[in-house]
Length: 449
Ligand code: NDP
Image (cartoon, rainbow, N blue to C red; front, side):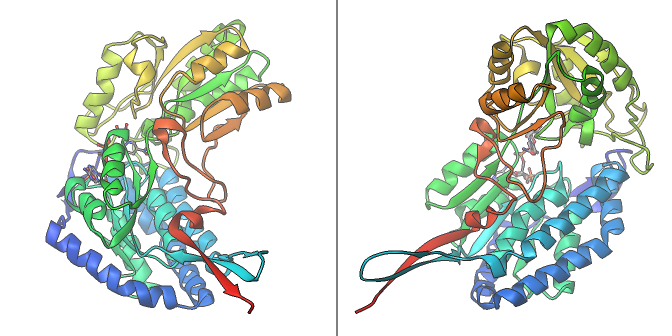
């Protein structure tokens, strides 16, 4: 697979893609490594993961630079992403020693539960956040005593390959964590079909997620799905409207909008609509789109030329209200863009665009805002801007989404659960309960006579 720098369109080398036979061999080695890895004492497993986290931290600049070249992420974002992967591994390094079962009172003996690892876990990673999304899967999976095979996206395998090397450097035994670049329908599909893989963690499009779920059903295989989004950013007139407008551009332009949590449907209470739009125009014009190697750059290119064509196709059909700037010339650039929103059949209003494009629509009442926010099959994230605490709570309880923020657009923290309602997915990643998704609960009753 030839890899391309999205900021320049130039080749940066190539990576061999694994065949079905190579995928099966790697899964077989991971299965063979499982018994020894699950038998590693909890404190030792924790220590190895802490060493892995420290290796990632020590190589954060190198990993960030790889991501800038391979994914076009601004260097500031890429450093955060490497730091996030290190922090996630560090957080779950404490888990092996805290993977406690329960003692449940019953008649005639003692009843205890154990959390047993599943075996081999297959992780399928998309191209939008190669390091964080990989670590959200592999860190809790390894901590729980599973072995992991991980398929990065074809377009962005470099940081995952480096993470695999750093795991070995840190002392993780061979074949406990294997990174396997390959095509989705080849390697990803083997994770679904191979009986030794006992769970698949998938992040990507809803269409492929549904196929993965259907495929996993055949073997009653565990599956976690983190899929698309079309999240609402609800701005009430009682909010700090200037702050809401200033924060809005990066809520859908961060990572060039290639973010499942992007707030791409902006709902503004009618009495605040005009002032909000005026302030949004200023904020959008100030977004710095450009060379991802420059520390002050906020937004880089899109991932590929075909993806840019796809993003553009939504804008071609819509009424453009505001448009920022982007470099000309080589690279897959697209300017931040705000469209007039509409319900009905408006594609840009209903479908995930995955580019720096949002739609804005006025609303009248709190009930209207909730109805519009919920007018989607997705349910991943969203934001509510208001100074009224009661309203924040009411609306927060009514919007159907897994991750909401009030007066903020922050969605993801490694210590809190992350995942979606409806077509946005199944199961939760991150947070204190993530290991439950990588273990089976076993109940053992010991008779006292
Ligand atoms: P895909 O869902 O096709 O790809 C995501 C991952 O799944 C990649 O690793 C891909 O491999 C793999 N994959 C693809 N087909 C299969 C298969 N049949 N079996 C197993 N694994 C498979 O997303 P795209 O990259 O095509 O992006 C399309 C759209 O999906 C985006 O525009 C966006 O709307 C959404 N998306 C959402 C993401 C999110 O974070 N929720 C992330 C990425 C995309 P390969 O790289 O080889 O194709």
